[in-house]
Image (cartoon, rainbow, N blue to C red; front, side):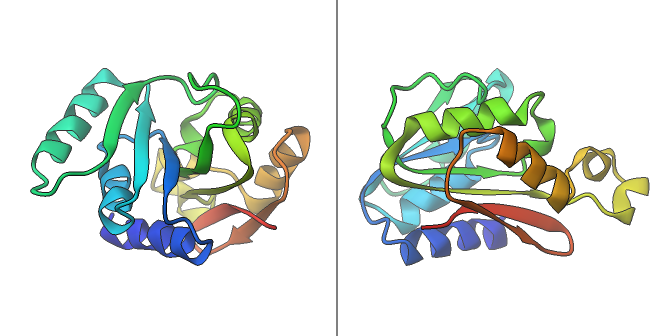
Length: 173
């Protein structure tokens, strides 16, 4: 997770995200949320997840950090994000896309809650022949499928990067 968190932090810094609000969709154990707050201390990071159990683990992980961080965890659905329009400077999501029933709804919600100059970074497993070993990889999207879903959505200025094990969907400005 540390390696993946570093890529999110690196991209956020490259984009000039030094303060403001960040939303982590499908936060799970909260490790990405916490790492973003540790590495970019002037941002407020909110982790959103549907699982109460995962949120308990995330809050426990936050308690173990010995520095004060601007982090909170909230229960909510990525297909119906419980925040106002134009709220976030950055929306991130790691290894959640393949779990979402209607990814187009998630993409539409990301566009809605982003500030006009906001950015997004979504990373997920990529479907490959390794799907014979893992149901998560079978459930993942190919780059073409991800592009087809994005084309159906209201999400603007996106690009899909294709890697061997994962794909990334990033803001392109």
